[in-house]
Image (cartoon, rainbow, N blue to C red; front, side, top):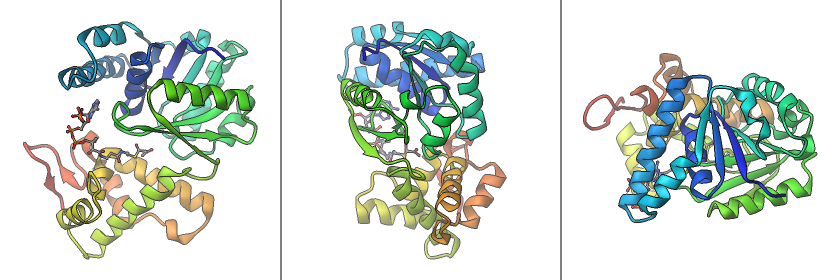
Length: 291
Ligand code: CAA
């Protein structure tokens, strides 16, 4: 299938990165969100990240201008109806995602592929609520999208081979590498990564180490680019907790129980970088551990 125009629902942390990489690869992008402020912030972020790529000579100033020119923003979800591929990158809540698909589906071309960037929700279940489970799949990008090389591809039980092959070709055109995962809770990356982060929070909770020593240990002792608590703040503690719940509910194994300290941070609204405070306090010049 030829894909030329791509609709992206949600202009947040993931949506703006996805818009960036598609537009840079030559696709026309229609970026949708419910708030004009979010769309404006997304365009500013994309421009800043393109500037970063220009300054490191990864792309030219002409590439940057052409990329920005290929992105159009809209507050009207149904405007995405005429695109060839829609990627939903909205809030990680199943009811929100279902509502988006319900609104969008009557306006879609019969051939349009629907995809979700969900980091953990069942693709089969999301697909079953649409009119096209065979042309529905999971396309999971990693944060920061312009930098991370992996895209997880998840087929629901009904996804057809043409849809999967089309997405494989798109991932290659984006200059990224695909890893195929079966549709089980949290797929591959988050099935492994988020319990590791949860274990790091238990290590903090039980007083085995403080924030600094835990992050230092994993950075210098396991060559991770970020320590697990720094990474948790980067991903968002609410997202980490939501994924632990998906694992705990979906696999019914107590080894996935969310750490009470993670729950407490989320209850406090200390969600990490995006709220200015998490395992580190980002409100000053340099991040300061909160424990
Ligand atoms: N857009 C474009 N380029 C960016 C960027 C962005 N948002 N952020 C960083 N970069 C580029 C920089 O320009 C730099 O480019 P060069 O290599 O050409 O110099 C490169 O990335 C490295 O950046 P920095 O030197 O500024 O910083 P760093 O070396 O500390 O790296 C990092 C930053 C790439 C984020 C690194 O710390 C890292 O890899 N961290 C781990 C990220 C990770 O694990 N992501 C997965 C999260 S899990 C997930 O996303 C799944 C989920 O569902 C929860």
